Image 1 (tube, one colour):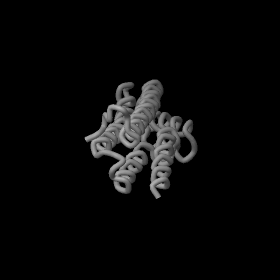
Image 2: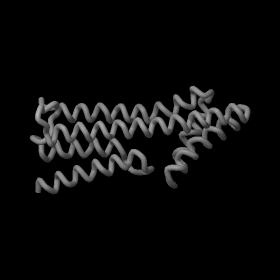
Image 3: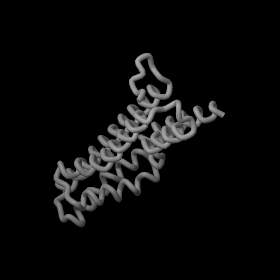
Image 4: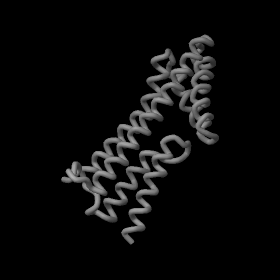
Amino acid sequence: MEYVIWTTVILLMLVGLVGCVVPLLPGTTLILLAALLQKWLLPDTLTWLAVGWIAGFWLLSVLADLGCTILGTKLLGGGKWGMAGATGGALAGMFFSLPALLLGTMLGAVIAEKWLGKKTDEQALKAGAGAALGFLLSGFAKLACAVVMVTLYALSALGSASQPLSA
């Protein structure tokens, strides 16, 4: 039974890593849930300290996901319409592919800034570029958080010579 739990948790974490770059797959949330599942079913194999750190990096990934696209849009001159358009475009694009998700984010910001924000073509394009850049940065941030989360899991669950996450 223990083998099945370990295999399930590791597979969930791998799917979580893939989910950081593939639309419609949960990323860091799945990694956190896998760690919690392991702690619940095999409590002696994972420390609460490790679970706490994994949860902290999950929160950081969520904040990065929300903040980077908004910040990218805002830094390149976009307003509330650009941010809303980027979100709507991302939601529409996520059902197709990763490039469609990126393109949807950019086009959503451009269209919303142009039509609703009454911006010039140049201003709308800058806002769209900012949204796309922010989206890419959020993807890298989520992936980095996911790698750290899986590493923390491995250090705690599999142990190491110095036991860095024992508590």
